[in-house]
Length: 397
Image (tube, helix red, strand yellow):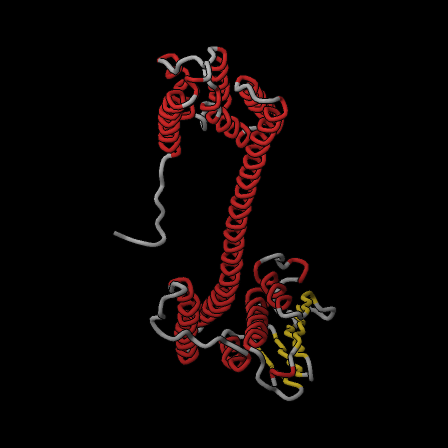
């Protein structure tokens, strides 16, 4: 038998049926005993079979009071009025209409509830008159009885309404949390998509250029072709390693243990390898560094590396291997300023270059994420330039 955390759930209709049967039994038994002990000496009509039938008519409809509250109240009221009109002593039979009136008040709007309260008050007033008590006593017991069920029923109804509102707010909060979680998942997928775009676009562009170069000099310059093939192999392996590191994030569950350590996040410390691959693809790349280089925060370091990588990829795709590229880094006290510019030799005019792709969008989103700024566009002398600036905290030093 399990204990704790499990409630005993009972069908409300079963509870109402038991209540109706118990109340009917108590009413009949008490009425018979009260008549034999007292009321038979006060000139009341004998408590006979018709009295029993009317008592059952008053009490047994309570079994369905939740389903048809108004019908139960009217049937019970009619039975009580017939009981009073027949001349039976009324003090033993007014409780069922009171409970029926409570059922209406707790489940119906205020106007309908007020009508039910008026019916109950009228029944109790009539019972008081039939019981041969004073007008004051009849009026007092009518007001007290009706007021008690009104206060209790309205309190129960208000509590039920607050519980319903709380349940609705809880459901809204749950849905909002689900939407936030989905939004976070979408943002993370977009971030990973930008990472994959950077990796795939850069490495595949380099692979395409190197493969073309190897095919072009395969017969005339075998050593150059071999060097290009070696570069293709190294570039492909590095691309696979980076993609494996990114995709591992998608495979591992949040609470699961990783199969192995993640690959280190690339940063400007790998700028030389990036430049070497660009040179192997045929670009003439020159790197200048101004200021004192220092380690940066991982996010800023990754952002700077990806922007430079995307810029070199664009040069390979649009300017061609004959272009000369300058990568300039300037370390200031609180910022990192960088520029990647090419002279446009052998490429298409800047106005004809496709725009609005994931590359430039990814640059802007990355730099904006870290509070920086980026500008990309054609240069007046020719070529294309990407200029960006990232804030560097003092703690990064």
